Amino acid sequence: MSLFYRSNFKFTCKHIFISLKIYLILLLTGLSLLLGTIVADAAQLKAGIAKVNITRKDINRLINDSLYARILVLDNKLESLVIISLDTRAMGEKGGVGINFTERLRNKIQNQLKIDGNNVMITATGVSGEKFICTDIEERIFNAVRNAYQNLVPVNIGVGIGKENKITENRRLKLTNGKEWTIRHASPLPPDEEVAGIGPVDPEIGILRLDKKNGNPLAILYNFAVHPYQGVPNNGLTADVPAFSSRVIENNLPAGTMAIFLQGSLGDISTVLYKDVNSPRDAEALGNKLGISVLTSLKSINTSKNSELKGIREVIEIPSRTDISERIASLEKEQEKLLRSLKGTSLNFKTFFPLYITYSIFEEYPSYYSHRYLREKMTDSKDLENLDKENLRNLDKYLRNIYAMEKLTRIQNNLSILMEQQERLATKIGKTIDFEIQCLKIGDMVLVTFPGEPVAQIGLNIKELSPFPNTFVTAYSNGDVGYSPTAEQYKTHALEDTYCIMAPEWQYIYEQKVKKILTNF
View 1 (tube, rainbow, N blue to C red):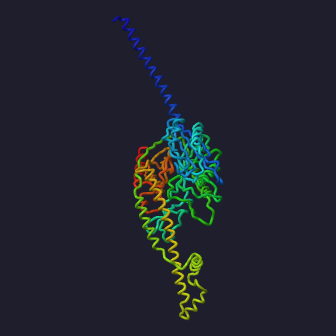
View 2 (cartoon, helix red, strand yellow):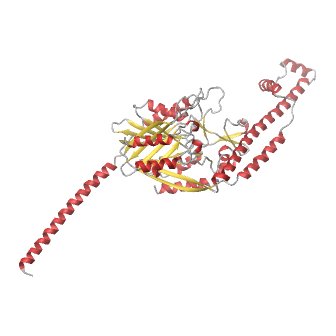
View 3 (cartoon, rainbow, N blue to C red):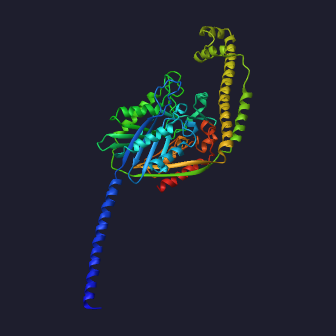
């Protein structure tokens, strides 16, 4: 090769190398800038909110306050989460929203808004509104979700834990015979002397605060465990405790702020004074207290630019219950024993009531003034003493019959429930139950869903096993497996373990699965 061509070749190669180097530098610089823009954009969490009335218009009942769906949409460009809270009793048929409601709504959101359906949580507040839900609820909620998604605004978030321990109590009474008794209007309470203790209550309020860039709150998401069945004095339709607590929160924050209630582990948690007969049942007072507790806790929650969003969803199989026949047989045996315990007595209610009052108030001299008793003592007469003994025997017999009939009422109620569950398991459910677990992480808050009504101890257990300090269980979410007592509670024969379709093993399976998910979350 000539010197000219060799020199030209070297020059050409050098030129190409320099050009390629410059091109790569420019390319990497451009990618870096682009990536930086994406990361910067992704680092900014955005949120949108919406609220829609889901009450039917043609209901023949006074409306104290309407039922609503409240929506929170979160997006950081890499992940989107949707939380939908409905004022109804549960998901599915029991909640008045129909079969496969969760699946249909998720699919619609995924197909039309391109948000992963696995990141959509649909939950109920637990209020008794299932008969008053509008027929086009699916369309109304989807439109609200779309509206929230189209109106995202930048937010800072903060997580905190409040406390409210004055409005709830555990409704499972521990009895001296080792059994338990659920406080209900459908059955009387046991005698005071048969009550040995009560179960636990979780007073924590899990709070997520979302602030707009001007510092004003956009939304307050709060989680608390309470059966919202207190009602209002006018007996009108109401969204109960969650509606009143949310109203207090919203009325004391800048206009436009939305409070969104998420139900906690409420399975055996009741409102206090649930059986009070001396004052009207009023959820407003209880809701006001809860709302004030949330507002108090908000003062100590600092928000920051935390954009972390994460979601995971798994469906596991839970074995169905197989002991219902044995439980029915056991109750029928107890029923027969109580029937045999009923004894004849001279008294009816007309004669029992005045005697009971008299002998309860004037224990020492019930039948006459004291001087008559003293006179009989002086004359060695025992007429009044014998009369009192006879009356006390008859009172005791009558009271024993009353207590037996109260227990019979409860047994009959439980038998009806068990037979209903037995039929349901045989015709609609089968040997296993699909059980969905969804975990959502929003900054420092972790929500663990439960497709039914877990008792308080389950929620406490999940908090204990979670590696995240701000972990909260949301009941009535994405499905409905009904009441879910602990394995130990199956032995005590109260409402929650009667109204249950899962085998006791469900607790271990669920808790271990949640532990595994959260450990790798």
